[in-house]
Image (cartoon, rainbow, N blue to C red; front, top):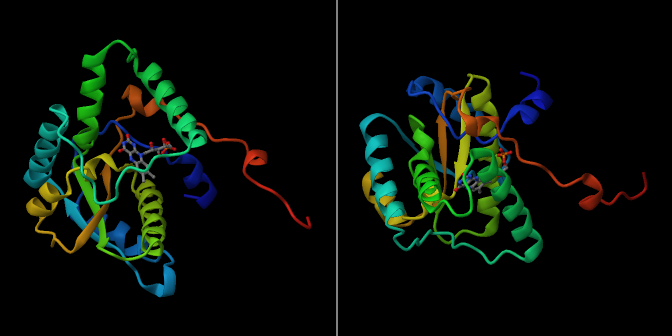
Length: 220
Ligand SMILES: Cc1cc2nc3c(=O)[nH]c(=O)nc-3n(C[C@H](O)[C@H](O)[C@H](O)COP(=O)(O)O)c2cc1C
């Protein structure tokens, strides 16, 4: 797939077919994704790839926590976003809820959606991306680059992804299940699988602010 086409085609997939992704395919994606640039080629990323019974267990643990609204304690705390960004988030969330037919009043549907998110939207596989605790912001920038590579690389195999901060809300439970040492900082989870083209959620497309709001040009 052409690179520009791939960047246009990627979107957050929130409905998956049950068919698992093979270890070989995920290995191929990761093998290429780690060609991502990183500060001083430090490659400050590590991955725990999850499938089968372990994936079911992970989804169960997280969904149980989410369904009783257990207090979240992610390794990377939720920031207080300035109002400009809160507004973008609100607009996107509202459009998504509208698209899904989830009204403001329907707390039951909202909770179901919320819990689904912690269940990786039923993706058959997940990739937990983590790094060493105490590294600088540069380590996270590196991770952003490799994560986008994974999302684009997945398209080559007919796969879809969603990056999930939600999956990292209860890091001790995830570390325990996947034997990740306490010294590691969990950054994001990636739900990965074959998109269910019929799923309503997969017909949603997010918007972007126009370039003239975010770009200034100099000397050209
Ligand atoms: C760091 C990060 C964390 C995210 N966490 C979540 C999440 O917890 N739940 C979710 O549904 N989407 C999550 N997303 C997906 C974003 O909501 C999505 O990328 C954004 O709305 C743009 O939509 P698109 O990916 O379809 O283009 C996350 C994306 C990023 C980059």
